[in-house]
View: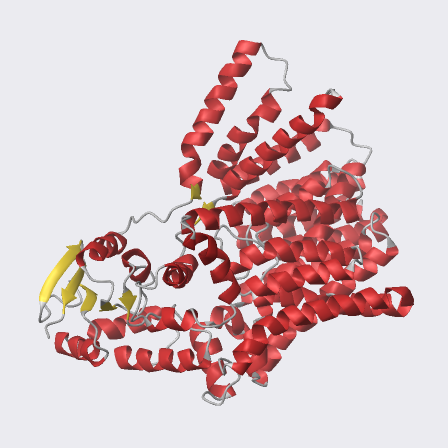
Length: 628
């Protein structure tokens, strides 16, 4: 780009702004997710103490707990008159930008140029494989883990650079927002620190200082809870804690035996692929290879402890650590390996391989397919003469076609075609036809369009100035195209960036109306699976399955209320809803009265008539006022 020195900084800043903005539109944002609806009432109470005075969950969550600093980080500016939704949106933009820039910086460590790290950024935002237990590297919702990742990812960058004080200080700050997102990567890098200390005694001081800072931040969360008897107290046994916390409320994060065979095969395939690609990379230095492999293997060891010390030898501390959250950091290591091989493929002219690796990364359930590709890479580097045999190429292509279709539906055909192009280019370099490359690029674009057609279009509309301005079109035509694309993109932004939680479903609309029809002191009995009424009505709720407190006292009360309302303790909200539905009108009113509740939320097809006054209804949902 021939930019004058006076304008270069401004133009680069504008380009960065457009790219980050376009990427954010492509990625999406949602304030009204179930996780956020569960978190925000406690923040609303900190801003206005007249809200939720009788909601036991909210009252427990505003005591000191692992969310304390996250809540107050939002509540403090909100008390000054700023919108909670606006504050969270700004924090998310900062975290998202930080995440992208950190991925790019990490990519530069291993990929050593200015363009290739963009591959790692793309993979970090779109990868569909490499995690287990409903965990993610980043998400569309501004939950504590996402904001903490904006700090922890820079901690990883500085740890790769052996700048331990900065890295572990950032892990410590992440701990304040989400304990596990700062604690787990700090544990992961300890073997690397130990090796550094052995090989270079000069680094001992920075390692020790970094660890001390990190532990101080961890103590800022754990020690107050311990002193206040909020955790590890005598009021709940370790066995009961694990039963309620792991088996009842969080089996999707903690009970590995319930993750499913396909999920584990997909994850294991991704991990082994990462190891193979690390070992066979010609770009990585020897020390980098060793460090990445140590991190990945140690991460797997940590992950295995989550099974051993929760399901085999139950230990409450390991349940609290939710070690399945190690998998996003393992995923990051695997994505680095994939990005390395994409660059390597481009350098050697094997465009089909680069396109294949990117496509597999964004297609769900393709970890085993990635493993076959990685094994093929390993074989081709050592037994290239054998792979040149046509029958071997045919067998491998047939194998990957069958497995891909079985695991990835129609994407399997696309994968098989790219895989065939990769094998031809890898083992028959004499074939110079450019159509192999063109076809692979087309198939990659097709994969992205099928996966992200709407999101990709919106992102393109905002990034289009960068593309269109560099083309040799007549100026009026350029302006027309730019105007059309940008206006279309901006008009569509609300569909991708849901900055406010606007009610749409009947129960949400009913809840918002109820806010105007009731006192802030109202207490409502709701169905067990409900996670919307509290948030949209800003009224106290007797109990809901999703609202699980972090304190020992709150956990005991949570179980007590579940038993009182449903008669059972169960991990499935739908089963609990069925128990709620089967209760007679008199039984439901008796439960509500036992907790001094004022209202009952139910459905007409569950309870056509209750004693008392019907306050409002929306489609099948009804609110009844209980007579005194």
